[in-house]
Length: 451
Ligand SMILES: Cc1cc2nc3c(=O)[nH]c(=O)nc-3n(C[C@H](O)[C@H](O)[C@H](O)COP(=O)(O)O)c2cc1C
Image (tube, rainbow, N blue to C red; front, side, top):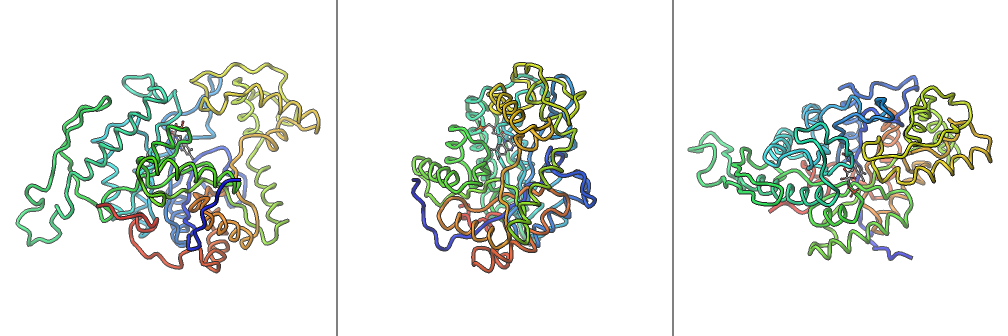
């Protein structure tokens, strides 16, 4: 039994993860809108802000996935650059944090630190940076040098990258830029320090170009679940976007693991916020919520999605198969690093296919029904607003997590029930703010100010 960490005053923090085109946002609902139009981003961000969320969050995908030579268009396709997209949202929101997932593998510190600092200034201290190394080996083919760093080297580079970014951001001392026209010069003489990078990944001499924002510099998020990823988070991150937010024991075990790593890194245990990704399905009764979740699942797995998921698993083009027929008899093609999933997710494709075949035979399921029951899915919480609020309060008050990054399964209206029904239930239990008390993302998250 994992030890819990009582925190009677803990609050639930919410973020929204706007996925863009992906395999499980429902297309077919009459109210569904575009997954890539600026109007959809605006509506979701403003709804989240009405619900007093900490952050609006975007992922990153730089290259389309391919399966057996065919473009896989159910993920990544149509995703604008996150920093650009968030800059547009900075203009139509006032308080909510704006978090960009941006990798350290294919960028350079001087450029990326400047772009992120730009977002932080344009949003007046609301920017966050979700640092990823990317598990997408094929992304390397987009770049001049091609190829890819191995897993360990990606984290070495990430560590050096974040250290460099902080040095660049701190290159302007606090109050370096004039705030009044009475000042004799815009930048106080001597207030800008050059940065000299000499490490295995970077050799550069940089004169930082931007002053500090209201929150000092962007809040650092991290997403990556390996031991190296968790250590990286414990040393560098303010927030972890984890994948451990459905089962209480799993969430608590993850949080305790992170607390141990924080201690080893010499940081206080409360120095980090843990916000797992989740889906949330709300109904007026428990039965209605379950019914809605089952409906959502069927709508998510369209015939085309069922074939695409099966193609990914078999690593074969199965687009000509009948989704209402049986599972393919074909042997799967071995996965390689250039496949459409990250290597970890297909490590046991043979085992998954064996299970699919057993269950499909036992239950008489078609290919599509098998994917509906057993395919890739976003995990999450289903219930009434009151039951969900009780569950979330229990999670935060026992130190299992600090809140959730919610992925709506309907765009652009998928946050409406959460904001209209769940947020008031959380407020009634005293675990959710009733107004923003700060203006910056760092303040929303209750993080210590940067020196
Ligand atoms: C919840 C979560 C969200 C992620 N989002 C992205 C993303 O949007 N783009 C991306 O390239 N990688 C993403 N990643 C993967 C990261 O690139 C991560 O650095 C990579 O998986 C390697 O780290 P790991 O082996 O420690 O998991 C995500 C990972 C997690 C756990």
